[in-house]
Length: 289
Image (tube, rainbow, N blue to C red):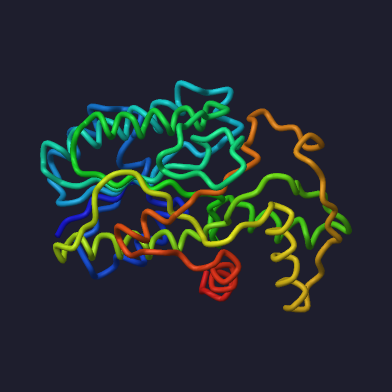
């Protein structure tokens, strides 16, 4: 089976390449081979390759930067997924696409379900929501997997930033009033491989939109505290952490205060559940770089 994987060096893509190795003919396309800002280039490559499955792990994920370059964010996060979905539908190939907690405004008191109405606060969330809508409009078989607070041992993410800053500074302020679930890219990749295995075995659940995050919840301050604890356990220095409100750390893009996603539907329909976020963190830190 031939799988077309969009995104080459991203966190989820790197883990997918490990999880899917040997299970299929994996054709990986990064920015150098395929410009997602060029719809006709996307169509041409999909038609030439004729994959049995498309996985879109590519995205414009620079949340603050998106505020100043909305056209690029929408080209990559909205137009490109729609084109992929259209071409996948023509081939009769399913599309797996990753979305985000940022499609919600964070004003709900409880965890968000797939039935809650999205209301993104900024360009990044708006572009990702538009991508979801374009995929659904194409009418083909698809899985839109919304995740949150993705990290790994590669790329740019909260884990690596905290590891560096905690060892460079004596004290560090971290936002404590944004709540969500840190999600290891390796967990996302493994779950994706399980979803593909179910589909190939004829045991696919309903297609559609699902939430896929680590179990449990914490704040960015709680996540940073767990990272600091692991540094100290290794005999490394770690700064003292101070909890601050979002209002004390202004950014170009507004973040949702509540990023909790209810993942019950994925567990019910596809029998897949990610591990607790803190267990996944330990596994990530113990994995080879």
